[in-house]
Amino acid sequence: MSAITSLNVADFEARYPDVFNPSILKRFMPLIIGAGVVLYVIYCWWFFSIGTVLASGQWQRAEIYARDWVSYAIRTTVRMGAEGTTISYPRFSELGDNPKPDWAIKQGNDVTITFGTGKSLQITPTQVIATRGSEKLLVLIEPDGAKPQGALPDWASLKEDQVTVNFGFAGTADIIPERVVVSRRFFGWANFVFDTASPFWNKSLGEVASMIVSGERIKPEMSNAALAFDNIWYNSSWQHGDVWTKLLQTIVMAFVGTLLATLVSFPLAFIAARNIMPNFFANQITKRFFDFLRSVDMLIWALFFTRAFGPGPLAGISAIFFTDTGTLGKVYSETLENIDDKQREGVKSVGAAPVNVQRYGVLPQVLPVFASQALYFWESNTRSATIIGAVGAGGIGLKLWEAMRTNTNWHNVAYMVVLILAVIFIFDSISNALRSRLMGKQQ
Image (cartoon, rainbow, N blue to C red; front, top):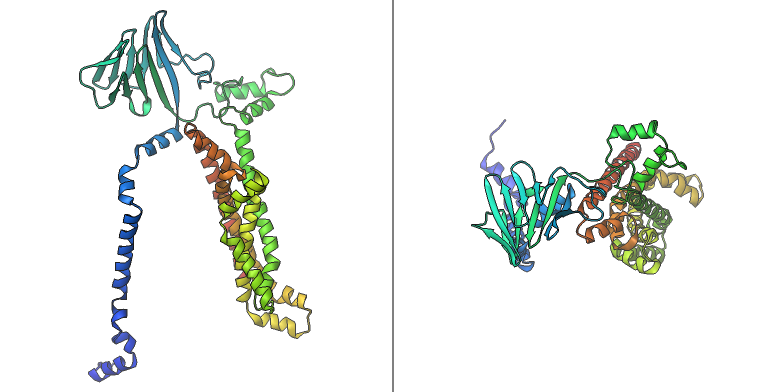
């Protein structure tokens, strides 16, 4: 191979000036783009006050919410009065109507509440001793407030007449004059299967199975198996029946809305495609109709139809139908405009009717693509139906929003989120498998 001479180099430079001698703008284009991105990030940081937001954010709430997703708290009140010390629980306690937990022991007028190894409260009518590891805090209970003795450890705080003791994940205790309010936390979801009113509550799996298989009928009008299912379905704490019904509504909303949008956008796409419908005005009117439908976000359509039809799945179906008709119509029409005209011309050359030209010359090319896109929108709408449900369009989104709004039922929120994730995962897998088969056949 001959060596490259200066003449060869000069010849290359003369033949490819854009490569060897680019303009100043092209030379510095990457640097300009990088600088533009950096300036834009700085501008966004200033305009949206991101630094201030991050500094003032209540990050501890994330830990609280995450904890509440996977655990539950039992509220206990220890009162010290003239009649002695009493322990009381809320009316609808997770421990049932006659709670006697092993972590709250009463001996005479003294109460001991344990929060795990090395963590406890020893409550008497006049004082409380809080123990956390090797540290102890003595709090005197006086008529004018709780009085901590000595320096407060970092796990205790004083606010006016109240001392709050924090035992970490295990719970907290508020020491107030004449009473101590304890929040004892446990990992898991309390009474997830049976609530406290069920005859199967607080029984082991073996005991429940024995009652269902060979036990005497608890209710004469139904079998124990039917009663167990009824108790699970109508669990007052978790409301499984209502949650699963709302989840089914969400699935139906996504399916029906996508199906209707597909059926309507399919014929309209042929009118919007320039190579199929030569009429300019028909093309433009149809395309502008698609633009109008998809220019309004699905959430806005949901708000509109909620006002029109009232809260419920019909509003959600209508919102999905309107939005997807515009989007699918545009996508379908663009697919039609990019088909191979040779197949259509071949069918037309044998004297086929216009309908048959579309049937045999166009549909075989676009039908797998249309079906694949419809499946993708169905999968996507399963997620979107949850969001629009939160604004009143029905489904599990509305129930999820109601649970979040109370700011107390975060374990119920976690339950519904897990169900939504499972449904989306299943639908995503089904949609991907079907799309792969359709596109494989097309190839």
